[in-house]
Length: 145
Length: 195
Image 1 (cartoon, each protein chain N blue to C red):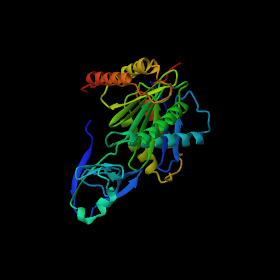
Image 2 (tube, rainbow over the protein chains, first blue to last red):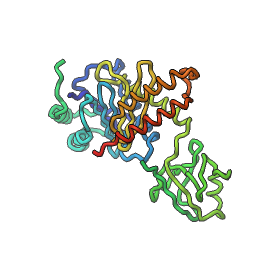
Image 3 (cartoon, each protein chain N blue to C red):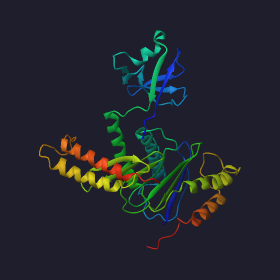
Image 4 (tube, one colour):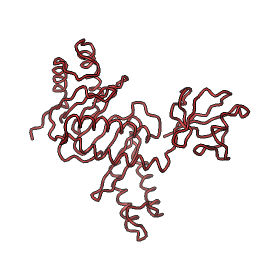
């Protein structure tokens, strides 16, 4: 079990924060390009799901899985998007992402007068808190291969 | 799974704003009583609507605009996907599948195999020859992997081995349809877990 990386996007598609832990494969494009691709894909998946759905959706798209990783998606009411990639054995991470939002993002970014809305998060306190939280999760266990 | 349809009797003037979207009359504004923005008009006074016109040939918007026709019982619901829309969605899935494998944090990842939402799951299996089987199920359905394998078998047996079937064309084979139906029914009987 392991956690690969985390993206935080605001509602305009700006990547507010990106960090990675055990990522072993780079996408081969620059980070800016990758953020755009990721945001575009998430937006398309959301619209894909709402058009395909046989009944009305409440939360909409939650996660997807490939043979090697699982992407968890959480969107707040204000349009803030959290994307967390883990390995495929991780169960439901929704509560964990909600924790990151309410206990770490709101406490250390929203309540921090130094952090401007809609700009990249540079707060070191936020980075440390987030890193500590992710490393304390049971899903985070470094594979030694 | 029940289709969400709401029928309600309206008096003039209609409180909802309707608009024409992709050849269907949908609610643009005025969500109320279970009728949501994006729901399409499925019928008026028990006459089914087909796209922009009713089955008896009258235009939906004209019927609704005419005060003499009121009170009207209008049925709303999620619009059914047309063949065209289904093709668009398939094309969309193909690109999502490719991007999913490109953005992988782990080496040699496949494309998307499973999408989860709060009301349905989408399972996808890609064969070695690049054919994708996509199944949309309830979130409690289990054993979809075996269903996908079974569908591949049915495809190989009744479409590919049919001498009148040409590859990469829509499948129109009776035996394929029959066996597909029975595979789905069998999976439906055994697959719903009560968790």
